[in-house]
Image 1: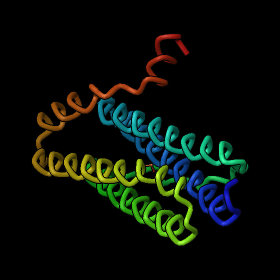
Image 2: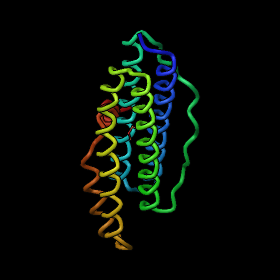
Image 3: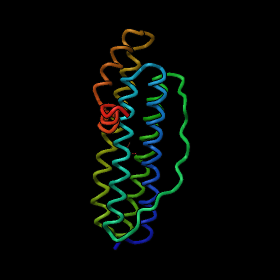
Length: 174
Ligand code: OFO
């Protein structure tokens, strides 16, 4: 049985993950509106991953005899001054998430909750990857500079990462 303190903290993290999905979906919409569908697809895939992160916590809480609870999700920004600014915001957000995961890990350790500690290790690794990917894209966008042609090619490159859920809906004509 999960203890109440941990249950509450993990439920708070579900909200953080859902906000992450919301933020990336908003970035996707921003890019789609700017005809940068590759960047938009990349963000949609990211949003789907965040939903999966939220579900991972959801299942874990319920599996341990707790109850996953959903709270209100804050509205994300809707516009970004440039692709660079959007990805810089994404990186800053991922750093925030990393600090949330680290705080959860500290709590699991102080509460001697070994199962939660083990479960959180997946997120610790995931955050290393998430920060690294956002950082790499930022460097690429900096290389692009003011070149429309280079941005076009980067958009194509990032468009390869197709979100499964969004692609299925498009195929179904929805
Ligand atoms: Fe982007 O890793 Fe979850 O929030």
